[in-house]
Image (cartoon, rainbow, N blue to C red; front, side, top):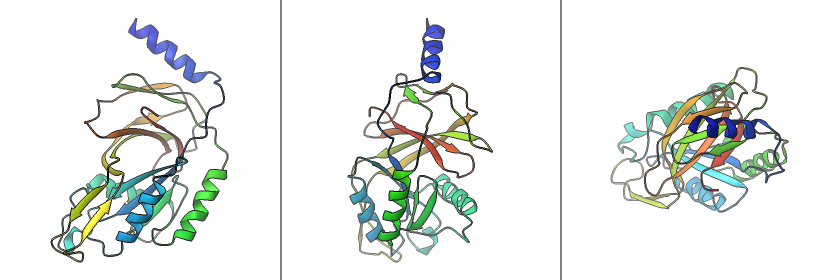
Length: 231
């Protein structure tokens, strides 16, 4: 029965489907609690998070920890993800606050007009994403489609939609309260996607966290598809 259900699911994902709502544009904010210039960008990201056409993900990075405050949410894999964008987008080095829009382009997090332009361009871009379907709490299926040159990867992202307040006790932001929203708590590569319908195993999310799956061109490329569990 399980094999039959899996086969049926993959066949449905591989075939034509009815018209669906356009997937949200993924907005990634790279920030740090020890970054003196990130407070305003955090507020801007929280405002964008209220828009239904966007999915905002806050990635705290760890390379500012040496300034005297160890970021309570930062993980090395978040910094590695940003570094992949540095190489892909031909930047000199990673920085904060930085906004990456759909893996297509980036802008400083404080330059709201530039970010808004990138959002308009991403919303207007034509997309033909592969379908993504969550099958219970332990499996996600990605349908068929045309993979980009160089291949693609499937990523699991789990974030906390609640507003987080952190009192910083040392470093450049000593004595300040840093407020962040949609903070990513887990980032995991599920495997490659080669254009064929494929099933991936996942473990259930911790209480309070939301689960997102991204299909993305390899090594920090553009985001091809996004699906949030329960959406």
